[in-house]
Length: 331
Image 1: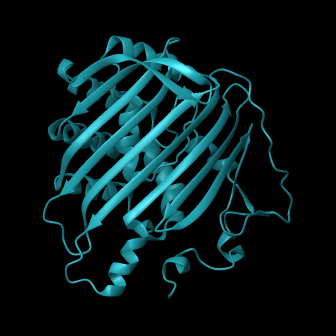
Image 2: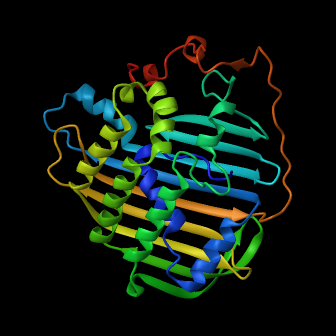
């Protein structure tokens, strides 16, 4: 339940890399398995996405609009208890200097989020199985068989020389100073692309992904309204051919109890022959920390009323203005 959908679909592959990359190293394999079995605790993280664009033949106004998405950063803080089916996910996203808070609450069968700008809550209970999944299905949007197939492919790509076990390091965490062992993985363009292409092929066949996409994603994202999941995945696959993985690195810290208490990912992509307005370079960083492992959590859920709640169907009517207006404002 702790693994909320905090990333956009374009970062699905990166999220998959974080979750399944490291079983080839026996010591790390045990740490991954043990960490995945955590039932309650706290997780927090920070991420950043920096993109450069080909601004050739673009107007000043068009270039100005790109500035809102050049630099995106955010953070999340999660308290969860899978056994009680409770969790509070506090997320923050900053786009071009504009910040948005988005809080998600899971309380048994009830799931709802606090909407940015208007400060009201929207019920999402019918989407719970897709957004959260279960302990057996880490990514609710994707079938478990698809995940397992991608994991198996990934393990087949790893080589011994890619994995480095470092020295013991004492980390300062919310639990205090913790003794850890450092693990590092560095991969190349060919390895990442091989996995990416295979992942797109597996997702293309995933009926659960198609169902959730058509039921929730395409209906709520205007730019995808007339795009099928097959078309989107095909476009992503074609785009991958134009990317060069300049660098990919992962570092994890495992404590003396065998849990991963900190993990960091950095990936930089270069785009070949980008058209005007298209992305030429992407840099993504993610830093996650785990603490309060298997300790009881306290949850303070807001009380929902007719006055502070809006339905998904009439959310747009309740907004004082469209979010897009923020990005088209004049100085």
